[in-house]
Amino acid sequence: MNAATSIVCADNLPHMQTLPPASCDLIYADPPFNQNKQMGPTQKGVASFNDRFQGGLEGYVSFLRPRLAQMHRLLSDRGSLFVHLNWRTVHYVKIELDRILGVDNFLNEIIWGYRSGSRPGRWFSRKHDTILVYAKKLGTHTFNVQRDGEYRTRDLKRSADGVPYKLTRKGPIFFHPDGPAMTDVWDVPILSTVSRERTGYPTQKPMALLRRIILACSNEGDMVADFFCGSGTTLVAAQELGRKWIGCDESPEAVAIASDRLASEQESRQMA
Image (tube, rainbow, N blue to C red; front, side, top):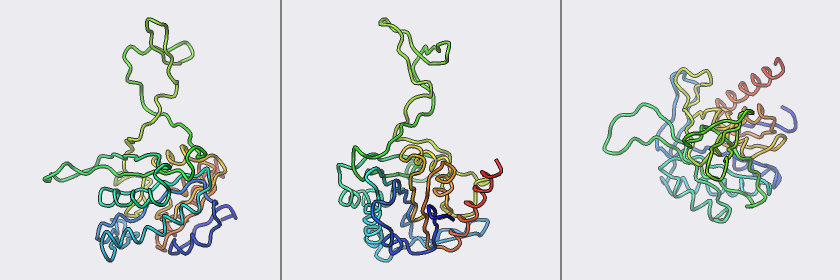
């Protein structure tokens, strides 16, 4: 690792306290979800962690509060914070984030919807996570519009150079050739049981999800941080996209997995 990149095995709170203010341009946080159970090991038996908090929900929020405050301190004025949660805690954590970062700096409540097997119950299947997004300073934060999908406009035509357009009584209306701008509802597939990305870490997120976040809210050379880095997906995506990165996790198994992935990605780039 060079001076611009580091991954450490530690409690993230004291580690963040050692870092200088305004040193991160993007922070992604995927903390435990307070599911009151042991997570993992998976079929590969690689890693597990205890997702239980003394005091239940109140204990969980008390655990996150000083960590979110440190993330706020570490963000540059161009920075954004993405906090990945689910239905159990998202409403309570949003209140804390409003207090720490300010209601006016709230950007989005991203709904990451996915499809996976489920058993029928007495409610609709819970098949989405929520990612809360805040700017350190609204108006100076980095945001690059992302585009994906197809236009739903009927009778769409294409010009000789491939630009989509629709004819109207007032003349042609041209659309962006790269597709419509993304909204705050994301359809990104979860990792299948046979995915080549799978490392065996129980809460591993897909690279496509982190690539989208990093491309939208950072530029090449920016510092991307993940202080609950788990299997290192954020760090690998950042390295692949030409960003600097900082990672931290208190699990030695997680740090070992992340370090191996980073080394493999670096080797692949050098061979390309």
